[in-house]
Image (cartoon, rainbow, N blue to C red; front, side):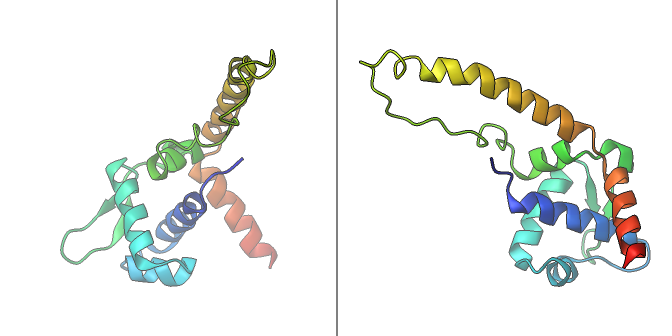
Length: 145
């Protein structure tokens, strides 16, 4: 199973913006330094989060801020904004099973049901974790160091 690393970079950016956005201008260059990601990647992530209504970016001078409450930002929403088809990319079924084999000719239908259930369970789990939860975990971890 695979959820793009861009989703974890996006969460990193959102935590950074929440923690420092009120105190200083948070730019793609600053986020690039913090995440270790290319500034173009950061700008693409910021653009996707802005399009979804998670972030607001000031024109001209730049600087990103959260555009909605932490409780409304879930891991599912972040992943969906960054990778709209991420659920369909989680599972791969071999493409050329033999149509002459009783299992081969039915394997797609058989696995579709199971994979759909797993996908639904994953979506529900991702919907249950908010940015508020993640920031709380971040703060616990940062005080333990």
